[in-house]
Image (cartoon, rainbow, N blue to C red; front, side):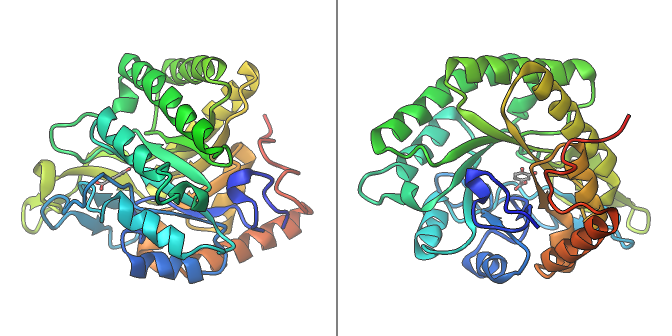
Length: 335
Ligand code: DHB
């Protein structure tokens, strides 16, 4: 397979990355990813400034037939420094290294960026991409920023120049900046997000290099009829849905943004995510326009061996169809 010609996937022959939150919260989990064949890049659990315990358990549940998962984890993580130290120790890995940040406020994200770009520790030298998670659905009392278009625009107007200034002062332009977005459903929502991204990239010199969509479908409810209660405890049982059942929504989001970005002349790559469990799924996401794809629920269900299996399946379907590179069919969904 061809190397993906992007700075955040520069070494690899595969388009696969783990989705943030799945098997990536501790050193042990991250080591499992680093050793898993088939993965071109590693993503951390979305980090906060300080470690967090997250929501009360049970907070994650899998359907018996493996068709979906629901979670309301509440950002349990070891804190930003833990992940940056881990990446520093991995120096020399063939993987591209993504750090996901999910500060509960703009100030918290800025504080994490200060740590990333600190000249004392030089963490920025060890990472390839920063993903700003604007779509965590599971925080009690916090709504998702990416659903409030005015706030999102104002937020980016403050955060992007802050990141740019840090990159400028450290000559750290190798780091790709991206946004993790929730699912959108209406054409008007895709139009608005595209126009916000276009405005931001015109103002801040094409600073946003990728979006990652979709995050889990927020606020689903799964009920266990035996116990007559929700299957997870936080938020009255409400949680983010993942797994095969969300794939059509995810594909529509990748396609919706891919076509609009092309029309608007926006050079922003798309990492597709949502319900990918086979090589055929990956093929469909690339056809819809994804540059890379991430695996979340399937990683939880099957473990890190899923990447190698999915890559092999992708190669088989490409060979059957006579495609030698991903570029040969990326975005070329037929009418
Ligand atoms: C959590 C869930 C998400 O979907 C996400 O993007 C970030 C965090 C969580 O509940 O921990």
